[in-house]
View 1 (cartoon, rainbow, N blue to C red):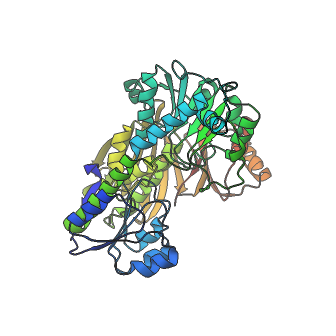
View 2: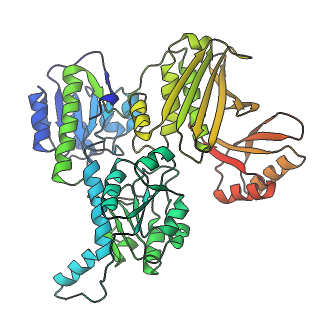
View 3: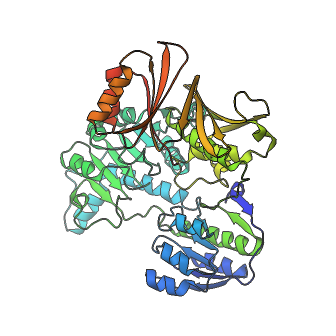
Length: 540
């Protein structure tokens, strides 16, 4: 476990009682008991049964079967902590837990090897038609004809998402002398060179790869990433596997591509809806290997995550240490908090303006703000950079650790000197392609405003949806934007404009009531001949 993700709470709890609601490896149970905790195991409980049982317990450990709903959390009158023996916390209501002051922890490192090996197994299974051969043999056939496979050695493998699990697959691929192509917007050139892989766009990867393996979290950017259009770009000999998260591949489009012979095969361990529906068209595809989310289902992984969560619970109750928390909230200095939240939003905005991965995050605090402890401002900015791509929540506790893993350098600067405003926060995001800088302040130390984007002064309230465009300041340009948005039934709530001189370069920020489809963005870009156009979504 990473020591970089722990903090200490004020007091430990004596004779704490822990309920294990899903099957946990015996070694994990033993560690809990050896740590002085009272442990009971009650598995297979529905929501009402879990509500009835939970009131007397200080801690709850689950895997993926039990749903920890707001109702369950509210029934846990003594509950201090919920632990997930695994990575995903989709079955735990984080918002409700946070509101009730209940810590939620996961074990982010125990499943890595097993998940990577399962992806490799799917790659080999697809390449050699193993499941079809096995089914034919068990049906009394000798199905040698028609099941000629292909070698992985020497082929192009495309890796979508270059995290810890992907690193295992890449090591195997290199042992097979495969050429590794990687699409990961947050993989720096330096890191790519270190691990000897070739960075490319997702479309280039789809066009060139013989095998494709997915290792990215499900985010707004990755949902439906492999769609009908990208499947059509692939070679007819391409095989694709997904042992990461359901929803990244458009399942209907995949079924159609397999049925039409558009690609050679696929392997899925994860699905948009689990369990997979009995009538899913995926079940009918002969050249598709299906496994029921077995990526973490090895004896070793079960033992590791059980040990990890048990050790974390012992540390929590005996020593007062919080480790690998996914919802922990640090109470910020009230004088700093508005600027910290502003920094997070500005960093999230800058990240969506950058096609390349962020190499360096610069956070500057100026004015009277510089007299205070502003570390939380920098950590919140890191959350803004990392939050859209992490497979589990980024918090003030784990932000620095995740940044180090991603190779993001944090540079902080403070000065009491500032022009025009009493306080200001400046966030700069440096990538291989250049740098974007966003400055903001809080009027009356509460009302956040963005006051500068790159070299343009502007007055912009933090929006939920924003269309940001850098364009030549010419008559009729705003009319073009408005016409296209109006024809698409997208309402403009507000507009802020910044420019340096008449008829020079300008920036316009349109706050919108509605989401903007890619086709509308393309229409605006072509009509106004705009190169720099960004659709940005923020949590405000």
